[in-house]
Structures are given as C-alpha cells and as structure tokens.
Image (cartoon, rainbow, N blue to C red):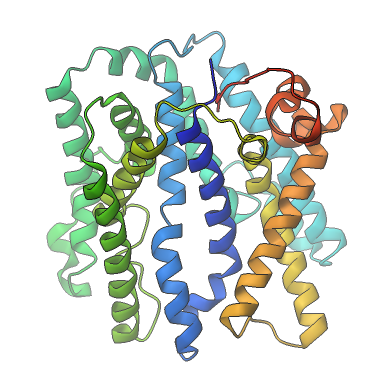
Length: 376
C-alpha cells in the first residue's frame, strides 16, 4: 500500500495547526490587544479544523475497504499503538509537574484520576479516539453495508441532532436554551460527537465525484474569512472569547472540515508522497502531538525568565514562539523515533516502520525504493 499524498500533507498541516492553537491560546482571552487578538482569530478559524480532520483521516483509513478490523487484532494493532505512547507521555508530564514545577499534589491528583481525566488537557483527543477504535470491528461491517441513501441518513442524524441542536442552542439567551435542550434519553451523541467525524471521513474518502476545484478553493477561503470575522465580532460584542463559530462540535466547523478534506483530496488525491520531508513529518506527527504540551510549557517558562512577561504581546513574537516550539517538537519526535528502545514507547511506531517513514534514518538515508503506508 503506497503512501497517499493527500493524507500525509493533511496530517502535517494539522500537526502544525494543533501546536499553533496551544502556543496562541492566551491571545484569545486578551481582547485589549486588538492586533494580536484579530490575527489569532483569523488563524484560529483555519487551525481549529485540525482536530476534526485528524478524526476524519483515521476514519478514512481504518474504515476503508480492505482495512483490518478483526476483533482479535484491533486491541493490539490499533488501541495498543495509541495507548502505550499515551501512557508514556502522561507519565513524563506528571513527572514534569512533580520534579520541575514542584507540584507534587497536582501530579498525584492527575495520576489518581487518569482513567477519567487526561494528565494534560491536550490529550483528550485520544480519550475520544480509543473508544472509537474499540468499535472498529462493528463499524467496518456496518459501513460496508451502507448505500448512499443510508450514508446520508446517518450523517444527517449526526449533523442535525448531535451538532445541530447544540449549535442553535448556543445562540439563544441563557434562559431560553432549555427550548433546544433534548432529554438525556436522546442518546445519539455517541463518543462525544466525534464518532461522526470518524464516519464523515470514511464517507468523503469513498466519494468518486467531487465538487469542482474552484468551488472547493473559494469555499474554503470564504468560509475561513467568515468564521474568523464572525468569531472576532462575536467575542468583542460579548467582551470575552466566543467559540460559537469555531468550536469543534458545531455545524459550522463540520461543514468547513468536510470542505477542507475534499479540497486536499481534490488537489492531491491519487498521488503518492514522494517528499522525504513530508513523509518524515507525517510519520512523527503523533509524537509531536504528544510532546508539544511539555515543550509549550517549557517555552513559556523560558519566555517569562527572559522577559518577565507571561504572555506573547505581538504577532511576530507569537509566530516566532510557535515556529520554535514546532521545530523543537519535531526534533524530539525524530530523535525518539530513531532509537530502537524508545521508538514504540514514545511514538507508537515500530522501529522498522519509523525507519521507512518517520525518523532521522528515513529522512537522510540513501534512496532504496521503500514506500511505506499511511497506517494510522
């Protein structure tokens, strides 16, 4: 199975976007710094698509025709390669809290509640992904048996009820939100709604006829400008950050993520990843996601020591901080993936797979014709 350029490029872009979101998080809550706040709103409108796209890529790969969903192998092949690095990096993060930050009580509390609460809030994504992986042996035969009408019905339920009601409810006054609050027995909010993105990715990946490329390009541009502008105006009107137009589980974000997925498929679909850099970055993206909270925290501490300021005050400062954090994260991921004893523990890849796609050996060795796969 060859590496797909559309998925590799999407994974690299999403990796960078997630790092940006956490590097720039403080800017969303300081409305007084209008230049930085406005800039962050525009970039955030694009960057928030990373999380839905990660779910969609996983769905496209694991629910594709021929993908393995044997219940005897799923726990080891899918869940294991996610759970082991999650446990390792959670341990490193709690150790950092204890030994570096001096917060032993916080580290102990995090350890005691780790089954229900991520050690670091950024790891919530995996707490949603692992249950979906456990459902793969059931989801694969289900989606294989869906015709187009049933696919549309399934996604319409998700868009209309799981996402639609909360989206509309967020625009009602607090006292009127009960009008669009369903009884808890309306149990269609499966896995926090993120299962819908997983299925949406599988559906869109199976489409053969796509909208025209100009429609997708201009749709993406206009939707991003609109989301950024509305987020900024809404936040300023309320006097505090508002995510009503950019939160992950809104109809607005779902439609924009679907458009971006189709745009990248239209631009790169059917091509094989030839660039070593893209292959290596895509291969190490999972480790970058896991290590970046620690690097962001360490970077913020260094920034405070150097300047005496807690927050980044200008657009250049934010961009330089983001690029520095991203570079350090990529470097750490590539190095760890190049050490046989640490590769699987901290990246989720076998060392042989990392040597094909996601470590320093893959990046710098002479060409040998190996192609690798996009396996999540």
